[in-house]
Length: 535
Ligand SMILES: NC(=O)c1ccc[n+]([C@@H]2O[C@H](COP(=O)([O-])OP(=O)(O)OC[C@H]3O[C@@H](n4cnc5c(N)ncnc54)[C@H](O)[C@@H]3O)[C@@H](O)[C@H]2O)c1
Image 1: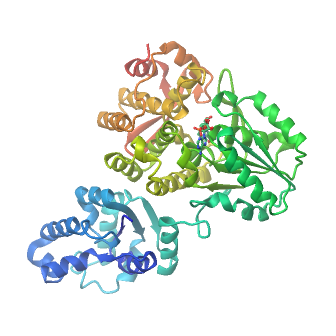
Image 2: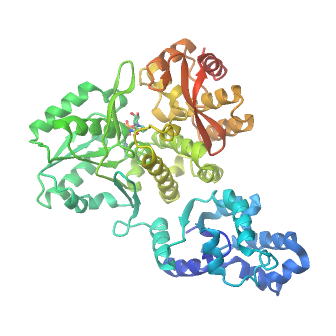
Image 3: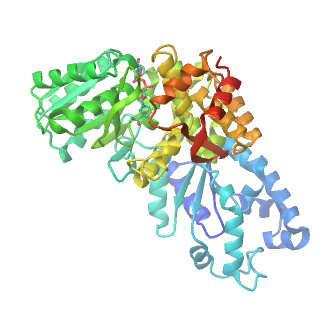
């Protein structure tokens, strides 16, 4: 077990929840403020009075450094612990950071009297003082691995949710509700797929999988047939070059042969290619049949399986024929990633880095800390699946939230997920969808689009440097393949993100902040591509 640091303002419930959670997890509980008082032999209010806030923060830092040498457990931190960047880095290095958020009104009601709170007791208007403190600290708290809204929750429900987040099981999985479909995450959840079909009541199930996952497919087939459901297993070759209308036609015929009707369910057990292809077939076969996804690559778990975009490629470009067709359910089983080759792990990581750099500074910092701890090294990556559960859940939650707010990409919000994709898709098309994997093209694409942002004066130069250096350490490409610039620009011609002579590109404003720009001149793109290695 690693440490679990609960952060949040005074009154967030860190001590109450921390104590209960430690009981549930059968691990030690530490109250950082209580430890400071015990070590100083006096009350915190007294330390503030005698040494000022600076003196207290020094003791707090020292105590935190001592604490991480103890047996891992749940830690209720003080409200201001996040103010020191060294504390934030230390907590990340030694465990997970969970932010318990509540609005200032709730916090004040929970605190009751303010005499023992040194930052509040002399304020004329405690609510106003609390609002100011909360506002100042909010961006720092948001660097957490997970954020819980606590206003309307009892400590017991919160402990239950936290327990599911930290240790989900097939019997008690982590559920991420989206507007379109439920997403359920737990190691081993694939073995319970049959129990989720009651709500769908399909007339037949057709399972679609890759040759490499044949045994998993057969186990699934057995478990469905054991419940009396008619089920068939179809095995399709893997790879982007099979994401075509021709494969779709082959699948339509296979479905007909298997006796699939409009009430049949297509269950896709595979990576993003099979998810996109299978989803497209499900969207169009007999004008649409339900489908369910059990994604088996990191990229498919955090991205491709969520959001209902399904498509096939044309020789002219990727995903040019497609639909929006939401799966009825997505079952995420991190155990399936154990057999994933390292190159495909990195492929998915590229998308994880994309979520972090465009939307979530905390996730970005978490991934950097994983790099520092060498969790992304080839030998360890597959064994460390517990390390990936929370980042996977975070990406899923981010995508689910964006899709809920902008399902059909009409508000520019969902388009933010396309950072790195304008150039990335052009690389893939120019290479004929061979040689480079999707995530590798996206990694180089992110570097080129960050360079573009810097050229246009939108992306700070240090953000570009941080992105490139981080992706390099992760073993992802940061330069373009030596393709002719004009060929890459030509590929963008067919991209859905091009409007006339100008391009629609997502550009970075900062780490964790991106913006869709509609009027990017082709000339600036040409320069960025050249600077990043195109000929
Ligand atoms: N629909 C969307 O919103 C969306 C988003 C991102 C990407 N995508 C699409 O996803 C596709 C890429 O997906 P991908 O990277 O998953 O590639 P993929 O589906 O080709 O899978 C990669 C390889 O890994 C193998 N594999 C899959 N699961 C495995 C496992 N558990 N163990 C061992 N081997 C395994 C496959 O056989 C394949 O050879 C692209 O076509 C991309 O356009 C779609």
